[in-house]
View 1 (cartoon, one colour):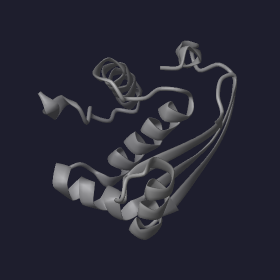
View 2 (spheres, rainbow, N blue to C red; view 1 turned 90 degrees about the horizontal axis):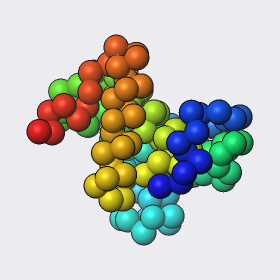
View 3 (cartoon, one colour; view 1 turned 120 degrees about the horizontal axis):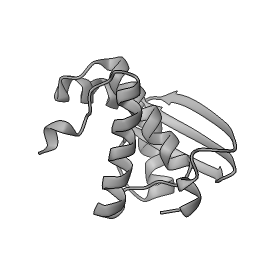
View 4 (cartoon, rainbow, N blue to C red; view 1 turned 60 degrees about the horizontal axis):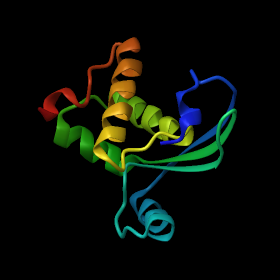
Length: 124
């Protein structure tokens, strides 16, 4: 994990959030992550702390499907994915279990501030 991401979110943030369809999400995921499927959110970071520049691409059909599957509200899940993508933009990841736990706890903390239930509570 990027240690700069531990600095209380200070700095300048330039984020673009773009909504796309499953076809484009699959193309982007294949091209940049070598994964041949559409995914809920992709983050493309160009600069990290202290001046964060990133594009966050959210696939709306995947978000809709996950809402039905997980029985969660659309705006709550969309908010979660924007937070998730933003944390990736500043250097957090979930490639190993320890990093995933750190990222999930931070997501839960932010969601709680917005009165949104934890998406991870049901994982236990």
